[in-house]
Image (cartoon, rainbow, N blue to C red; front, side, top):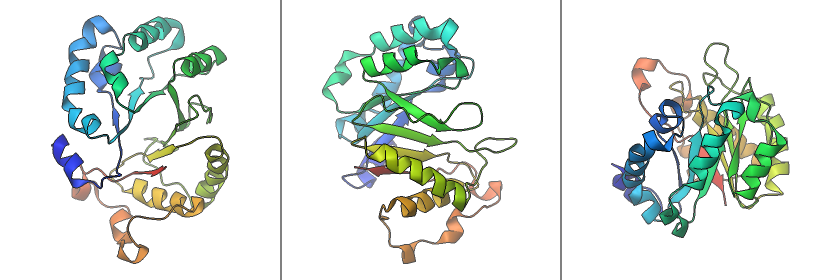
Length: 235
């Protein structure tokens, strides 16, 4: 399956992949418990990094992973990251989901170890836009849904405000990856297209060839399990 993704995408298409939750959520980066799963993951995505299409690996940490208890485990995990990956050009991205990580010592550590901070747009963390690796910045739009955060359609005014902030970020980074949650409602594609327009980023597909009915809210039974193209990249 992964090989087919590589073969069916354009030559300049890049992938971002996320570590499996068994590593981040179940074993909380404990190397004694997750090493086998980690190497299995590397093996499964080998067609992507061997093809040169790997942009980033995202380490999304669970809300239960807090700085006071888990900072040591986090550092050990980073320090033991497989050196075999050093020959590949990609970015290692960290997404925190607990407020305790919003400390300057954490951001210093990210900078010192060439780790990209994942800026998040969500209810429980501040929308910090820290650039910890000047060659790459990573932003995730989770949303502000009342029951499910990511069941959210950003309004035109919201997209316009965020576009202004992102334009400032673009002045200080070489490459930018922006992602909207791939919710079954199809909001991700619609919001991505809206933001691209605000940022002046051209679409791969001409506007007249895009069926906007495909990006409107649909019944979950119709599109459940499908993944939308919910990101765009600025080179």
